[in-house]
Length: 237
Image (cartoon, rainbow, N blue to C red):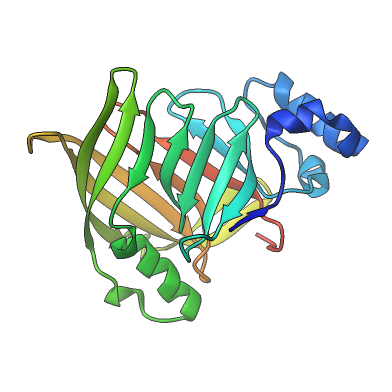
């Protein structure tokens, strides 16, 4: 079942009669900027959950939560950009993309993802040290050369910051937030079993298990994607 929150951004721009004047001005501003950066006032007036997204050195864009897919019993959040790109996240991890230079079509073994354990344990107030620290999965990917399958192996650790283990803070558009930093170091395994590019993913999450920022490499030779929370309806961070 898909619970619709907003329609795609293209329909936003086409159906302006459904928008307030303030929202239209926000989109006009966003479309005209090289790096999309909303002011504090624009963020306060913006009526939707949104994140900044940046791939490598490309310009920062704004992505809005389009809908939540709960069909598999796990919430999958689908994020949409004005340019037509979409990113699907599960427990803060990007598990599917469309209309990027190269795309992830599917990710296996998500139920064993240690990130899910860390976030669930944090939400329940349980020790994080009990979570598994290794994970393997298969990725169905698509590039200009066509579809292919690869796998990834990774290891997780909470990153110490000074004397307060793994506890740090991160600057969000609306202010600084106390977070825990989880680092995932891994390597992609190419078809035929050959070890390929190493990668490091990072997830910053609050004490109730909510990811507010991430840096993720989805496949070899694709620049990392950084996602930073701009506004989350129902939350104060």
